[in-house]
Image (tube, rainbow over all chains, first blue to last red; front, top):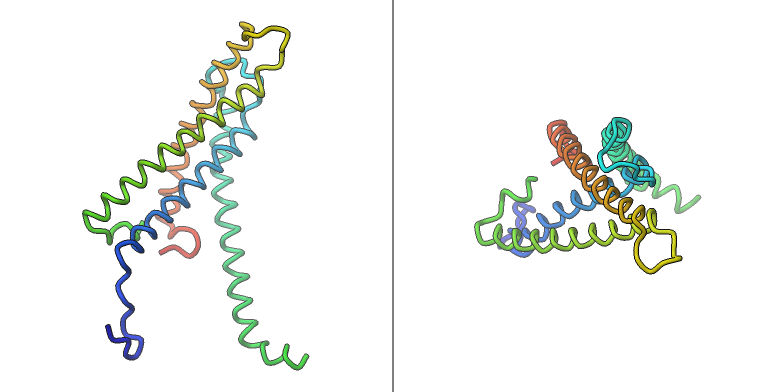
Length: 100
Length: 94
């Protein structure tokens, strides 16, 4: 395997590919479990007067999912932004901090 | 899920096996959470050894309600996920 001019990374091994796919699925599945946990806590009061979801609970659950996703997106955007800022800052301000 | 397209048949089978085991684990977790939740919320009277009728009824309704909400949340989750995939996903998309 030649690495001339960085032109081509080694193919990921079978185990690595499976692990990557598994990690992706796990991320989604964990997110779902968290979602179920918090939305049922927030939307389903603990009296259980009846077995079916009433209209209020149903609507609450729907909105909870939408908001949960929105929060996820916003947090990930912000963290990406911070990471980029830090990278940019580290490269540009690295010299300054050494003498500062 | 871009990662999944590049797996050959054998790798997909391996992944499938792992996913099935994970699903089993998740189911067991859900089950024990449910028992805990419904017990905590419904059973508070220890003057007798067996469940009172009202406690039993409460537990049954609790399970029903929880399963129905899980189902509904699953549907909404899939919808949101699909929407998100269309819009390029989180963490910069793939």
